[in-house]
Length: 267
Image (cartoon, rainbow, N blue to C red; front, side):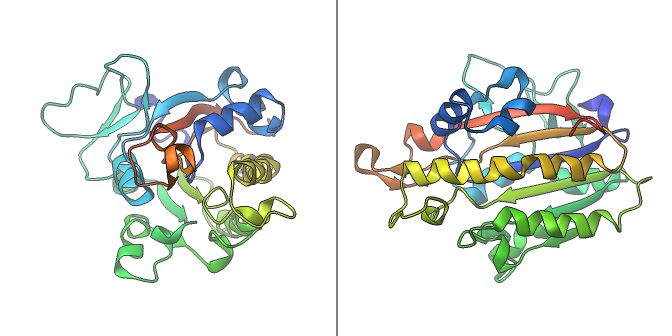
């Protein structure tokens, strides 16, 4: 990633709460064809999140601790905040002298943009203002949140408005937190009265239906876009008696991950 800073726009998408097993099953069954087209080899990489809930996971992500491959390491990181004793920063790692990625990229000339989804990005409380406060520009509204059946559509409408104002000569870092997978997600499955693994899957199909629009928007500035898409954590739907997350269960810790470069005109 070191060689991309300045020449590429950057896109980080967290599909909040997406389970790896559900993501892998859907892409294998052809139910998420747009994501399959983008994913290297048409498959999600299985990784472990650094945390079991949104707030902690995103703090780790922005410091350079993205989900870790499940194979034995050490694994070189894409980017990293500088600190003594780091053993996972290598020749291709972009190491920055800042506490977090948005501020580091701003210092490198990027405009930094946050489109929040779940409550930790809603700016309605001091806690909900911490993560979006890292960015030069941050947006959240109820239509972006977990109760909206069209949350990603609303975020992409706002993204289109913002992109029209950002000079194409200036590189852009876009962070998008997608709330659709998070409970409640029953509204994505017609007739469902409770959240379930099936409604979680239906929410991912909803997201897949909008991915091509997202990619067209971010590549419309004429720059290649280095893209990371992952989940911050999974969630339980009754496994071993558990419901939800912020617990140490495999369905919570195991997440899907992918990175790749988008080019103008591909989508």
